[in-house]
Structure formats: structure tokens, C-alpha cells
Amino acid sequence: MQTMLTKACLRRLHTTLSMMIVLMLALPWSAFANTTGDNSPPVLTLPGTIAVEATSSSGATVSYAVTGSDANPVNPTVTCTPLSGSTFPLGNTVVNCSATGASGITTHAGFTVRVQDTRPPVISAPTDITLEATGPTGAQVTYTRPTASDVASSDNPTVTCTPASGSAFPIGTTVVNCSAADAAGNSASVTFSVTVVGTLSPSLTPRPTNSFRRTTCPARLRWASGCAPDSARPDSPPLAAGHPRPPAP
Image 1: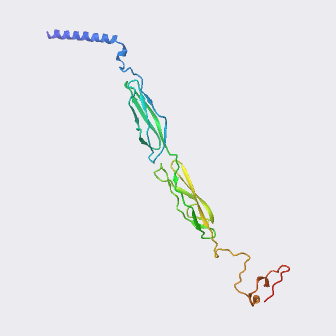
Image 2: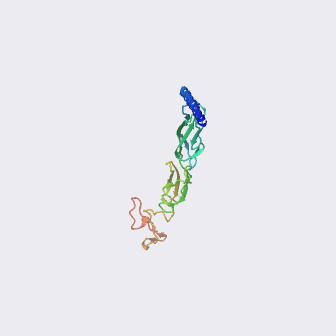
């Protein structure tokens, strides 16, 4: 009896499966396709290359907007890395974005964020220097070298000046040129003047070539009133006509 029931169940199951297969073959293929009716990928709307100026040695904070559209749903979820509002380092960074529609199709796209340093360093303004000469050629001058700062550098740029501090400066005014450059190649320069004033002192004043200074007076040139003048000395050159030698007192 049990065997008869088993055979009857198998025949019924076979008949049911055969009918299901016939029905499935009779249905159009579209019945088994995506029920959303959306077989197209989402569309991502991205910005072009974003260029910003660095605000610190770490780079700059950059915000951007990326949207996605699809037939179903109309606005699929969009994800991007790095996120909008992140700090981007100096240089180029590629932002990778993706959006997945209800059909399961994912679209990938990206754009570039460029953080650049185009601003020159800032050099402190030096003060003009005026000083006295220490010799007939001028003076040796030592000055405090100006400093520089740069918003996009962690270390301050080095300042170089010409003529350098400690150089010999001639009498008069000399312009000192100072410059600094940052890691990006931006440079800045400033100038200040060094004036060496030459005050003539008796010890440094050269004696005129035609000067004559006698510290003693030989007896043959000694008059009652003192030494004879140059024109009355025997070894003096002859006077021009009409200018006789003065007589001795």
C-alpha cells in the first residue's frame, strides 16, 4: 500500500514540474529581467580640476560638490575619497567617486585637486644704517640679516644679502640687496642702505705737497722778528720781475 502511495506522489510531482516548465517557457524573457526596468549606469557630475592656494605647510582645506543621477532611483548615493572638506597636501590629489544605481550597476569617475604655492616669501623690512668711518677707506659694517617667512613652508626661507654683513663699506652710501626663495621657487627681495660718513681729522688729513713747516730756524735765516719768510731765504726760487726780495729787518 505504501509503495502505491509513493508512486502516486511521484507521478503527481512529475506532472506539476512539467506544467511549471511549460509555463516558464511560454513566458517572455522580460518577465525574468530587472524589475526596475533600469539597465543603464548612473551618471556622475564632477567638477573640473580644482586649483587652490596653500594656506599652511599642510596644504589647504578643499570643499567640492559631486552629484549622481539615475532612472531609478533618481539620485543614487555618491561616495568620494578623499571627502569634501578634507585637508589636501601640496601638489595634485586625485579624488575617486562612485555611484551605484538600483540595477546594481556602479559608475566610477574622478577629478584632480591641485594645491599650489604661488605666493613669495615675506621678508622683514631692514632699517637703513649710518655710521662714522673708522679709516680713510670707510668702515667694516656688521648688520642684522633680515628674516623671511612663508605660509606654505614649515621652515623659514634663508635670506642672503650682498654685500654681506661684516664687509668693508666705502665712504658714501651703499645699497645692500637681500633676497629669499621658498621650496616652490617663489622669491622676494628687499634693499636697505649703509651710509659711511667720512669726517676728516688732523691725524688723517694728508699734508699738501706745497706746504712747508719749519720747526727750527737756522741762524742765517733768523731775523729779529723771527724766521725769515720763504721769499727772503737764499735757497728760495727767484721771484717774478717787479717783486724784489723783502729786506732783512
